[in-house]
Amino acid sequence: MLTRLTVVWWILCLGVIFAGLLKAHPDLVTSFTQVLHNPVMDLTEPFPDCRVAHEAGFYDIPRSSPAYSPDQDGDGDGLACEPYHGW
Image (tube, rainbow, N blue to C red; front, side, top):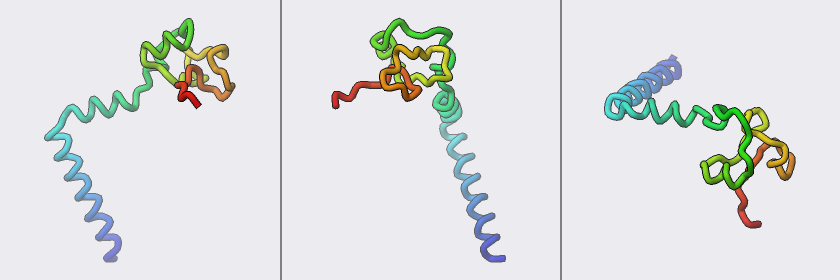
């Protein structure tokens, strides 16, 4: 019984903290949804090359995206225009 009450107590506390954060910083909801939104999925065709994609800020374009091009996936892992780390 005590354990159940403790869990309920912490859930309520987290709810109050979250509500306070949203009230103090209403822009958190907007920025959180922007993080969840994948802009690569909004593209309709592949970039002409990875240099152009990188200049636009796009890396690791998944195979499921219309912006994916097999020609730009050098290692065949399903991600095109991966960043070069110089290794």
